[in-house]
Length: 254
Image 1: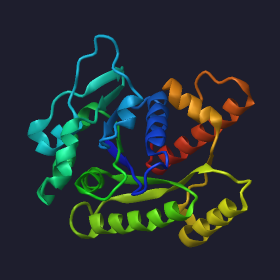
Image 2 (image 1 turned 90 degrees about the horizontal axis):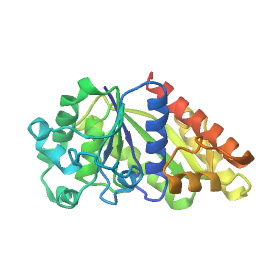
Image 3 (image 1 turned 120 degrees about the vertical axis):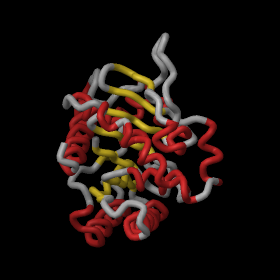
């Protein structure tokens, strides 16, 4: 099982939406997918309401007990399961650094049941973000093109460096920065994108995800934007998001 953490230390950049779409794309490619919601806001969990009669599964705070805390995740549908955010996450950032490695141990205990695990991380530096990256094989950074958001990229890259060099996870690979919610009609945003590409080069994914009403509607309807498409706007958005997800999965060798 490969583990992907979707991370940015700035909120509001669409991490949960990216995580949802990567999970759906992987599932449609035939992979067995596990979603983990480490963000106490629970946006990822809200994207997958429990089915009628669904059996509650393991919750995210239980991951911090390590392998002995493992129980079956909640199944959303065949081949797609979730470990939901829960109120217990509120106490985790007050915990000692010793628990940072525990979620990785717990998730590895589930590795035989899944091909890909996608972690939606909290938008701030703390134990839960560090633990998510300590558990992951790969980290993906969605970023919207604004002054504060661009500053957050540097913060996250420094955190990745700490995770790699301080013994938490030397194998962690940063698969790229994904520009999201872009507005290419804006000269300021075009300049911001140019600055990103000049500064980070090939770290920037070729895909770019403009701000589109079709994506907001898909989030509201709790489905990927390429499902149930109607009209040119939905078709364009569906093509953009499929291409981005395929590029992400390709960078992981999936």
